[in-house]
Length: 196
Image (cartoon, rainbow, N blue to C red; front, side, top):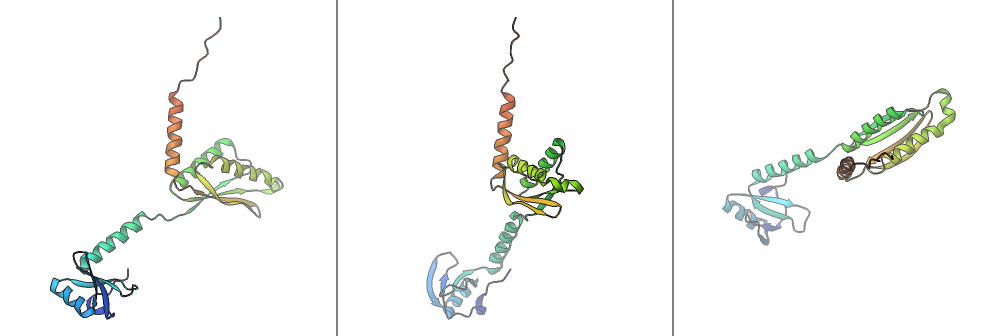
């Protein structure tokens, strides 16, 4: 992280000064600003070098820098590295296998990752590419509530692939779906009484 210029490193002749109480002092000469910082037993820190004149603040630099580093570390922690997870299908994927792979895709989308669905054709299957399109269309429909299509199905030799991205509020959407499912299970289904 680039360190700000402090004290004698500051090259501007005049600066907009903020005192150690956080209140604006105004535009002063650099020598006056340095003198005030010295009297307070603190540092003069250039916090906005591109402003006209540069903005400087009187504060304890080591404490200020420590706080800034801590904030940057927190921001990096919260940042999520997006990965593209690939899930492969065949054009004749059975329902059980399809559902298993779809659930894996939901897990990846929950983790805020993109998912690439690939349908691989072997031998004679190449003559029936529409089956691959059907698989991807089914996925598109099944995941429409939680994902958006990033790139439509693209054929490449013996492959057909499509990339989806999780919706921004995927966690809320999944919670809502889970809630609706729980409520549906609670409501007793009407039982027909046998006719005599």
